[in-house]
Amino acid sequence: MPPATRRGVLGSLYAGNARSVISRGLLATRSTNYLVVLSGFFEPIFYLLSMGLGLGALVGTVATTTGQEVPYAAFIAPALLAVSAMNGAVYDSTWNVFFKMNYSKLYQGMLSTSLGPLDVAFGEILLALLRGAMYAVGFMIVMQALGLNLAWTALLALPAVLLIAFGFASLGMAITSYMKTFQQMDWIAFVMLPMFMFSATFYPITVYPVAIQWVVQALPLWHGVELVRGLTTGALSDAMWGHVLYYVVMIAIGLVFTTKRLKALFLD
Image (tube, rainbow, N blue to C red):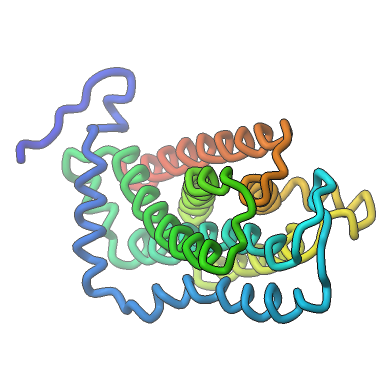
């Protein structure tokens, strides 16, 4: 295949060949330890079985943001669906990118060809998005089998989780591009775990004091949880457009910072 020619305003950044990065990533996935990949899929399912079905028998029903009473399992299942998409995207866009950037020097090799930094950013983010989408689709099937999708709008949860995965993958790669040591990478888990526990995942946000609610509402996962929960329970509101806008901005910021960072590291 002849090398792509860079033209236009983005000529120095984009050759329109992100598919080459994706193809290379899919070929490399053949040698991946699938047990490690599958662990990210089963983690939220175990939470659903233990807390949603086990603890849910004691909790009964819980009110959503719009005041709709739903079974506890149907309350936390969409939150875990958003977490599933986040996990798949973040795992692929952080540790994988960290090794490729700092040890295998893969991006340095890619950028010595006709590929631009935006090709590499797009390709890697779409690969992470693919992993997040696989987790989310699998979890959605489990939800359907357990009768936890309460409205036809649950179908729209699939594009919603793709948006969530895209947002986390984009921002995850941007942040990872600034990491230099393993100790710095530990900060990602340090942030993700409390965000997972406190983003209204297992209980309504109203249990927190007002000041803490503002902090929770600033977290990206809370917006994903509210968006997916509204779609799977049928508790729709205009606020859902705000959640969508949050992720659109998150994706744009991640793409811009990742592209600039790759250019600064390997081309300038």
